[in-house]
Image (tube, rainbow, N blue to C red; front, side, top):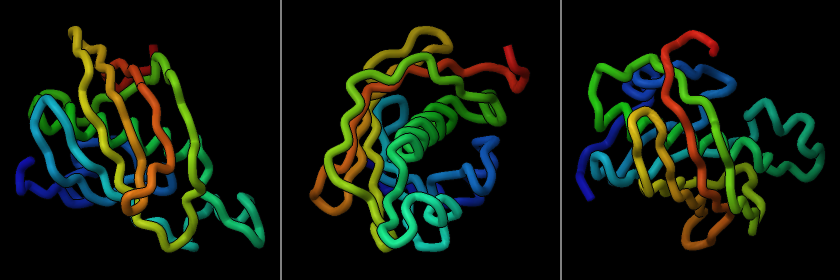
Length: 151
């Protein structure tokens, strides 16, 4: 693990995502080309809580998966340097996704990503989302890094 912390301003330089789709606030424990931990402070002010679910707010699982992808992409850009900044990350596969515990307002979500494989511009990561020691979600994601133009 490294002591490097990447804050939201740097994440916004590295990734093209913006509110309401930017789903990580910080990157911690970075080991370039290997692993990192993304941090998401989940607050009641998130726009998705208005409809998911009124009276019993739960962070949608697909957004937890998206936070995993963004954490993975930030690790890739940090590892590769400015050459990849502003590139888009397209999902190719989401495998073995499991949701084990709801993520609710007030939680601090830690998204642990570990590179499993990299071939050219295709990256595969094992991901886990945790609140404290509790595993909330896990998935294997494969993504392709591309120029900022839709294929």
